[in-house]
Image 1 (tube, rainbow, N blue to C red):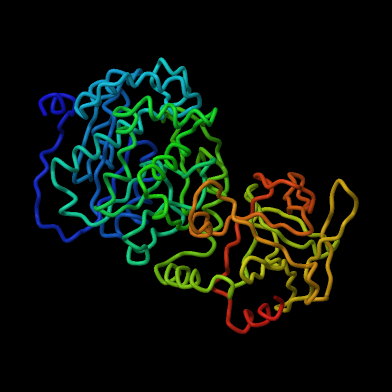
Image 2 (image 1 turned 90 degrees about the vertical axis):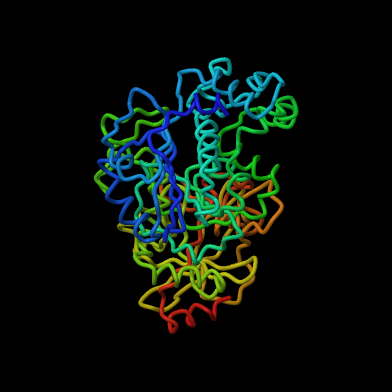
Length: 463
């Protein structure tokens, strides 16, 4: 333990007290963007959950002891940082009792080992493994799993558009992550986990340092790993993948002018008045920001998940847009949420459904795939609600995981009709033209759980 003590810079003595709060929110990494996020973080996350705060911070030249996240944290853990984290990996490996040469992992290409110089990889993913290891070490040293039931692991530069979902709506036996930004794996930016699964869910570094040759061989089938794929791989290896559940992607990363960054510097977005690091994140969050404003809305949202096909769903694209019918040209198109009419819905039943056009509270047509040649097709309207050719098969996007795909992806699907997939083209057109299902062919179906019962029954006659 002496070496561990030497690695950790203690800034606060942890005293176990009787606490009324049973949830601990932990921010990992540099305490960035506090000018933009602290008030939002407190209002939308800490207060609704009645949670305590811990910060696990790299002790680097950017650290500021006056940062409000640090000042207001109940637990403060500063950890060693370096431009090359190889020595830190060596020390952690000794503490774990490993002896194999972990540097063989540098042969596995991608962006998952940045900040290990020998890997020649971009980014700073290796810091995430170190942060999580020190976080767990501090939690275990203070026996905080005996104090807190749930742990919410996130970042300080995460701006929330909705209040955090009440934890009573999130099954404690599951691991909960937002429903987006997976990049071929599972997002690493936010995790809700119970005390019983905390260690198994977060000890990403252990297998790499204890069994590096085995891990290199297991990873050799993929040529370009990223951190999201590592997270999914870890959950799979540790028997947790079947416990993964998704909740709405309600936040996005922002950047203050002087914040350092290992990836995107971001771009100012006038819609939110901040520098947004990843527009795709903001697009995900804006979809739910339109729907969820309170705990009552969350109650309706989670209740609707048990009867998802009862509610017509708006159809969102990966461009940050939504499907609509141009009332002049009568074409199916996709456009920005802010100025696209809410007149197109997906009406589902089991694995199939129809895309319907709604006018003046009435369903006026079902959109039908019509072949316009071998290269592409378009969609036109028909009033024959019983025509089998109007049905689309909805195919969950997530691949490589053996569990209920809907639970994994939260209604991210491909829509297939007549052997082809629907595609949202970058120019705003919607075509039925692709034999494959990639990003432009992904659609998020978000049920409008606030729709009145009378309106739902009108839709309910279509399938």
